[in-house]
Image (cartoon, rainbow, N blue to C red; front, top):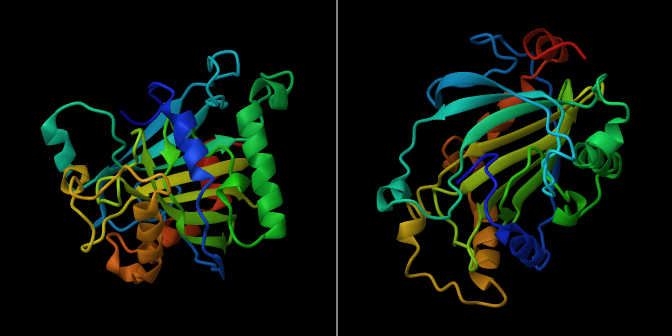
Length: 282
């Protein structure tokens, strides 16, 4: 239901829907925070927010291996953060929905075993190129079309974008935004099982693409997907999602759990030398 699993291609329809939304103007933030090493991971986090951190090596997936999906990536490392919140939707049995989960991935932008990186990993190469252009221009408003494919591959589409902002930290820069992923014909309204705070960006030396998704909740949102059954979904304009995205803009950052500022601090704590030591040399 999540991660790298290959589910039916409902994602194509969802991506078509995603072009309908008008997105808010993002902020630009410049923060420099010296990190402290915690547990042998190259970032700092609050143990009150997350439990155990696990390191998952991922094998390379070439364009030929990906079978037509935009899932081609060189070998990389993913750190998953143990989520402490309940997921009540699981109690109703298997079905297609996309519960948020928390991880940080470090994807190298070189591979000495590949004769041509761009040909072997066109999605990864293209994502890095569009991120470089996005960060060079810092164009407004932030448009999901400027982020054709997020890394790593998600077999689901973004339902909306809210609270988008550019960030420029000591060793990493990129974009943050709130979204929700969905695999339904009629996308789920905002809820605390699917709400996700995303980061997509690059290390300052260009050696790694850094991708993160963090599960977040808000006390004024429905507990989960089963708490949204009274909200109408058959709406060609998807008004309920547009209005939901506007509502998220009004919420204070520290009213989310974890707070959005604390999640940005995790990425701000990244240090290139620590990445090389823990994840691998460039």
